[in-house]
Length: 344
Image (cartoon, rainbow, N blue to C red):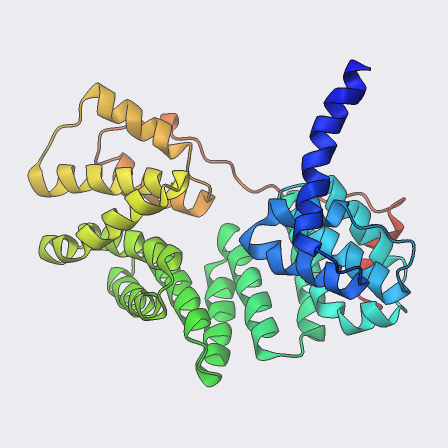
């Protein structure tokens, strides 16, 4: 009885929430559209709504759309097993009209699932499949960028730059300012990695201006931190101090763990380079702890290369997980075999 009462306390708020969102609507498409509406802004809310949907009266197209939303939600929340189950349902019926109309999106999502699971080469293979079925310029940009990031993480700088440049050409042609800013930032990171600091500054400045004009603070913050980093590497104290108040204010506003960690490293680097400060044991320990909050191996490598040595931190205390070329077994995985064949 006690367990039943506890379960009611868990279930009732969810049911009340769902009723409040859907109101009197009992239309399949409306409910799917509502889940899709919350997908980016609040994936947890989308997840609750999605779980409350019953498929009894759904058409095959509505059912496929339901599973597709399930993939997107699961990937957003890092629920890889749930994403795999939904992908398996969708790829078992590639002749379905819904699959044909959403071939690019489904193939791209499958590549994301593989990448998040650590199966990078198979993810790359599916991205190349997705590129073949990309219809719009935005889809091509999205895929080329993803391919570039994989190449970058594997140290294939030539391929990474080629993908980024191709993507930027498309973004420029369709005048997509957001895409151009993202790609220019990525090209700046690549230039920074290869110690082409002047190119890095130019790319970051272009990207930073675009993100500011577009009012995209998260992207502005990412690029702003990169810009501060390269200003220090070039010894441009005045430029650093001109840009840093705005960027550091955004760090405080957004309170993102990875961005805060990057910001701390940059500020300590400034102290060492421009004020000849000697870091205390406590400050070094803080930097090492912050290093572990960074999510990108490429950024960790740059910090280790340029800052760790100067700050007097032992490189062995800054571990970086190297991407492994794992391959997922496909013998008994029919949906994945179908996906990797690109024959649908």
